[in-house]
Length: 81
Image 1: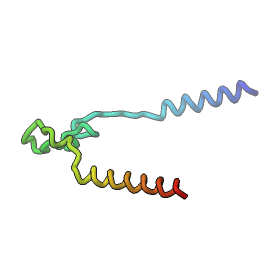
Image 2 (image 1 turned 120 degrees about the vertical axis):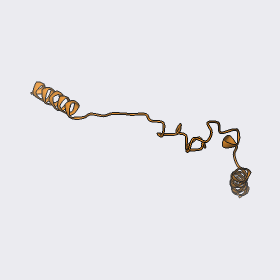
Image 3 (image 1 turned 90 degrees about the vertical axis):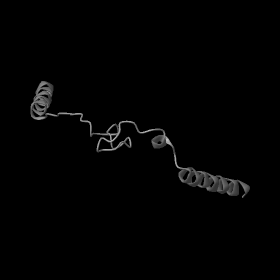
C-alpha cells in the first residue's frame, strides 16, 4: 500500500514538472538597477548621476529624529509611573 502512495506522489510530481515552465529575463529597464531607478535621464542625456542621487534630504532626517524623540519620551514617561 505504501508503494502505491509513493508511486502516485512521484507521478504527480513528475506531471507538475512537465507542466510547469518558467523564464526569467533581465532587461536594462528591469528592477532597481534600471536607469530610471538610479536617477539617470531616461532620454540618454547623461550616463552619470552624481552624488546628489545618494544624499538623504534633511527634512526626512528631521522627521525620523522627531519620531525617535517622541518614542523615547513615551518610554521615559512609562518608566516614571
